[in-house]
Image (cartoon, rainbow, N blue to C red):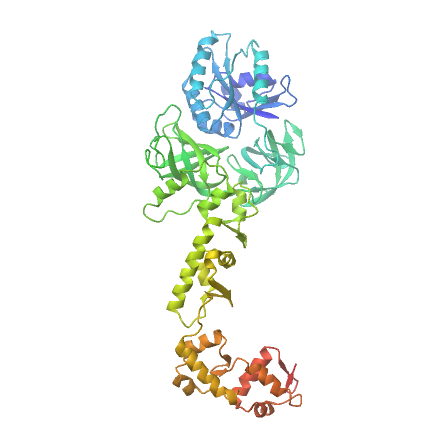
Length: 602
């Protein structure tokens, strides 16, 4: 189907017109009918000539007190039927409705002049067309009708057919985001929500995200009939399983799970209100209207009119902190409104839904300059270039396609242009660590990841593969220079002395005084062990690196099983060395103990 929303001043005949077109009553509530005015959103539908699909109407209230309801109806709908009464002409709410449509960037519509039987409609038509031409709607086709007499209705139906035939074709494979404009319960069925499906397809049994939880679609209705599936664009009613009426309402959104980012801080570009030649000064507190949602937001300006990022002085780049998180994407259109002054402040284009924190002096201005070149279109290369590092799932949730050649590891993506920078920083970090800690055999991988502000150490492999990091190598959980000489000269000389002592008696581990005499303290010994120059088999027991193989070869000559005393004699050492040495061999799985505590070579 196609969906069109009404717009216009209160009591200009919007509901009467919908009733005449469809034969249905759009005003659902008894209070609306009693007062003769639309208070909440109404819905009706009909079939138009030369169209194979029906057209649904979202009938919005025109009274100034119900602008929020009006915006909830217009927000998700691609086209409008703007209504002006011939006997009243252009009125205050006509202006506010047009300001809202202009701010939302609505470009498709039709002007309908009602009550043509009560006054000459041409004056009202010409005046309305002049106002409309100054908005995003431009010069619209116009039809003059009378809901009371039926005059002009055939021409209106034909004009509506032309309007909806020219609307953009929806993307049926798009991720679903259904803004809820009404929620209620049906006896025996449970919770039902309605909304305008602007893109995508919904099927019975689908799971949809509602905030942080998941709900299941147990039934679908469109135009009063059960359907499966339902495809955009459509007015739909979803019967949901797993959610109570008190848990869902107008302004909530049902989305494809894992495909949308919900955030309460967004960077946006604010255009001037219709007719303004310069950006308006925004109050600190505003209402953000997007889809059917109306959320209070706090404004933090990022740019100043006339600044280098906006030389025209027409737009503003601001950061909005929302009272509630919303599922948004770059490129979304919304509007800001000052509810106290009853005025539209401007249209909004969402630029970033996961913006960086602004902690440093001058960060806001720098951020505005960074955003100056983006038009709010989801773009993988652009998003990565700005963020440098990004989760794959987050990029997908922004609506961007992930290129196959983007460097990735551990579920993270890296901007290819950022890798050379990381490689240079890694080389600097390794060199600095080597100078500060000459006894360590390289920079630990976790420390290297922290130095580069990498969220996952596995990303180090991508950095090490860069030509700028070719002077580095990784082994044993550490990153070091390929030409690193290993241990300092003094330590190498001391280790050589120990190795000389062990040459003739490989299991005569040097005593503590001998190690101290050579200058081998805890740090030096640890470095020698890490470098593979010595083998530690127990506290204070250091042997040559090949001591285990030599020990196994000597123990193999003993009858099996053998005792600790027999092993000690075969190795030519003391109990101080033999006990930790045999325990070390057992931990490595090269020996085992029998039931009597004797040792057996594996």
